[in-house]
Length: 460
Ligand code: LFR
Image (spheres, protein in one colour):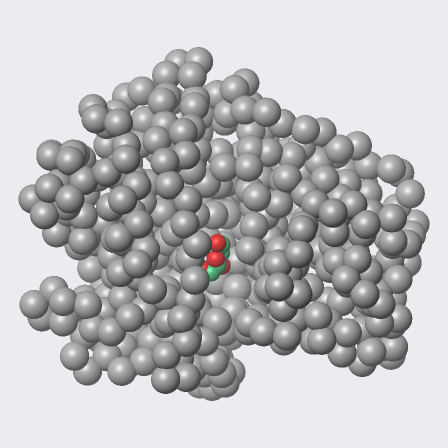
């Protein structure tokens, strides 16, 4: 994305869009990270000259390992790979939930970097770089760990903002592989000669941004009050509130809420909900049918019949999603969705229910009042999901911007260049320039209360 940012201007121009397809090799699910980097170079090559800077963000938790010469040791492994099966459980038993949560403030997800490292061979590793830091390293030759993304590893001390030596030594992990931390807005370097020659942008500065995509997305939420919840909705739904300080209570730990680092030292207090991954995987199984037509059909299917728990880790791995959804409903004694439209409706109803639960719990556990829900990211295009989320939560949903992550990324750069203000000013700029849509709740929350109770009942 190329962007133009000014006092009353915020424009994005899509330069290149490419699929990010994982590849299974010898039984292990990898990211094609060289392919991604090649596409980054192609995108930069098609950018206009005179760029002020560039920033990199991506999904969290995954990493590449470098050897002593700076070469990549093997392709990064996908967080959905089963190599971490049982690892989190083992470490939780060894170290203890309370200690892990007090140290990192992180929700327990089986793929957090800390558990991946425990399943990895680190014998030849000298440096660990999270995915955006790896791409920035290839662009500049500089290594480092951007803080918002480092906060998803499980190895960053949530109180001090430094790597947790205590956790590292308890787990026997080599502290030396973790590079120095850097904050969004700090300079990383300039394009190294080979990257400059490939792209035609000699001397282009690379600036650290909220390199965790969700941190950038939350920074671009067009909120005009602090009484808001957000849903960064794409492959995942990341649902929560923004706070000044972490919540590390036992209730918070048991509710599996996370305290990830945001731009400007804020805390992204949220929970991962399985997200549109459920739908994407259904579409993949069905051979990619026309989505708008399917959504239009799903809007006419009677709602709240077939339901799944959209937090269940059984939905994490790829493959056979419609069958897994059907089996989940059957196991819970709920009607099995008949056909594609009914399956889609089941997914969207279930996501809306999970959104509602996470919003309510985030508000209750943090003491933050919530008056409006901002749904940003690709999911904000899905009218049915926005409407169902408003109905389920009983709150107005403001949908958009679709490209919140890219906007948060460029706003962090613009701020570093003195071309944009702080978080509040950036959000006002987003609110004043980007198309947003408002979904009012229907007021019929009883049906959703019943559905939530049905899904929660252990008898099912
Ligand atoms: C969203 C996201 C989530 C993170 C998951 C795995 O793209 O970054 O925030 O939990 O992907 O990295």
